[in-house]
Image 1: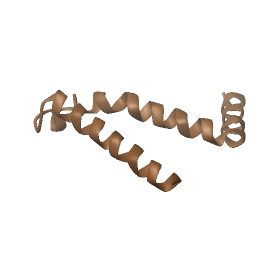
Image 2: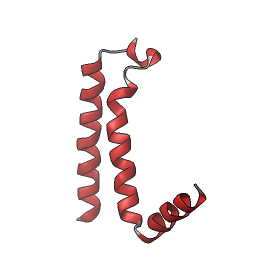
Image 3: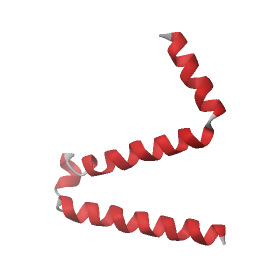
Image 4: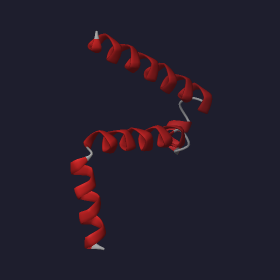
Length: 69
């Protein structure tokens, strides 16, 4: 088990941008599942949460574009 953990740690140290992209992909995959947790499901419908996440993603991309320019 420790050999596998060491190999993953070595890979993540050598390829930092891939590690960040994998983290973003995991968060993006888990966001729609968060709205199914009972405290969040009582506030809004699932489509309302997903719309909010989509708008947030668009605004994040716009902000990143402004930082590049």
